[in-house]
Picture (cartoon, helix red, strand yellow):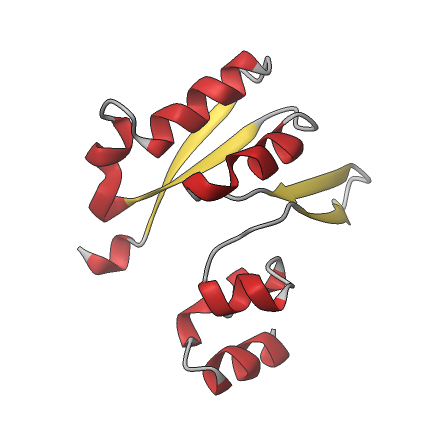
Length: 119
């Protein structure tokens, strides 16, 4: 984590240090959005193997999001607190992503709110 914090600070993007754990590409880091699906694995103390898929949420990368989502058993959809309502209006990205996930058969969906420190 120290390396991610140092690298993010060097680019003037201190708040991105955690995002950079999964956003490995230079394009992703420059633009500040996930572009490609990133896969990470870990094992819990009880021996359960967990695979995390970080898929893009930006509207320009919906096909990439689908590539990750089709592999998922459940999903966590992050919604920006400042644009939360907008995401659920007609044509909203949050609503669209949830509909796409359900169309893929994913029924276990958590909607998490991020950027709470901004309100």
